[in-house]
Length: 228
Image (cartoon, rainbow, N blue to C red):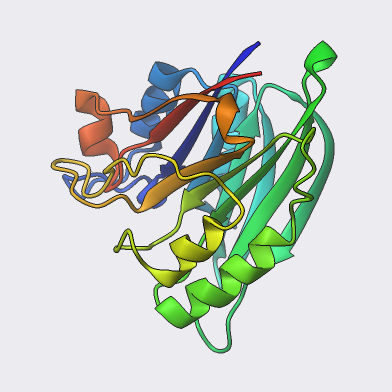
């Protein structure tokens, strides 16, 4: 069984041309055609315009919202869209002191005869100290049994491949390729990352660098194919 996963920081649907256009984000998702996609920086307005709900309706996928920031006119945060059956979900608070609130979505997906898959999607903080503490909390969401299968993905905001948060994650996950996804028009930094347990289920990991993706957000989507 092959499963396609993606992680995409949609930047509130603000593109390289500074226009806000959720339809372009929808177009990129349709290009990828994922079974599961983790989204960061999705927002909703009380006056109307819930981006995650709209994307779910347009794609026919199930949506799981992970709000991290409440504002006077709406909310903002993470989201997951999936075609898979959902067994359980958990919203995890990763907020650090007085920094911007952060969080993670942990979801257990039922994969028919292939069993289940735990997916944890997140968007970590901007400072090294908060990312280190957030990683400590994230690894507690996994059991690490040999028979278990799981994925951690999202925008880790880690600019350095040798940063302490990544080194800590590699105590638990096998090293995976660091694929440049930022900035979208000419990617240099691997801010968006994905790991699997066990490492052997990861078949392919690449950036989705279509012309539409290069203009729709400041990040390119990161796309993985799992062999289950």
